[in-house]
Amino acid sequence: MIGTFFEIADMKIPLLSEQKALERVSDLSSPKKVFFMNGHTIMVAKRNASFHEAVCDAHLLLNMGAALELASQIKDGVGFPHHFNQVDFITKTLEGLPKGTSVFFLGSKESILHKLRPIFITRWPHLHFQGSFHGNFLDDKEALSKIEIARPEVLLISLSEPRQGLFLHNNWEALKSYNVRLAIGCGIGIEQLAGHLRPPSWVRDFGFEWLFNIMTDPLPHLFYYLLETPLLLTTALIERITHDRKKTS
Image 1: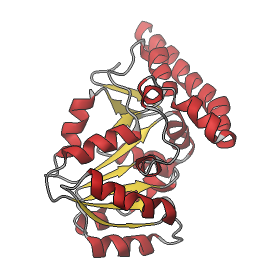
Image 2: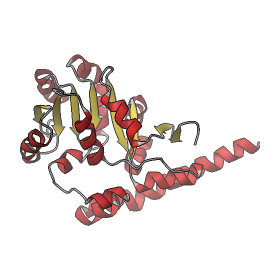
Image 3: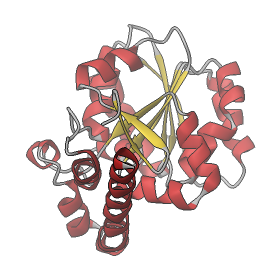
Image 4: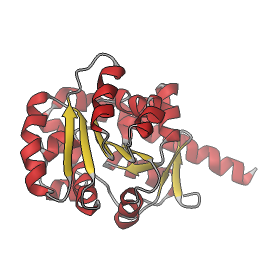
């Protein structure tokens, strides 16, 4: 590790405990974008320069998944202090937000969002459900108009990458002007909050989401794990060798 972060492919992921991360996101005094990073998103950013820029511009990156943990071990010989997963972190973030904070959900399907609303109102009565909008929009302006009307303080966005990160990056100035203080790219976290395809707690705690994902949605996840994970680990090994050579030269 270099200082207080793990760096791979010129992206720096801080070494944070869960408590420290929660403290950062609960502070709404300054606007911030939060991305979850796993092996897949690292490799997408490595291939996509625009998404790489979006990742580097985020205010907080949170490590997620066994592949990234292994990459950290290979490159630096040390793992992350905490294994984050989207649904647990979002749940605790919502629990810790000040009373009256307004929350807007962007992405996923209408059926999921419809199911999520009563769950949210029951589970977090101290917060305001400020609205939602599905992820099937073709133009960012369509989604932005909904957010502008709602003017939420917290935006939880569930789109595929790199679309999710690029939406936040390209529209950040507009989102801030619409009152957004915290935006979290939460991937399938919205679906899991609604109880859809949510792995058991012990699976999340031990970092076995990858196995659950393969069992429930095999085709895309087999691609991620069988192709992208070896590429990620190879990248970590090459960077380790390069770093060691520079030290000895």
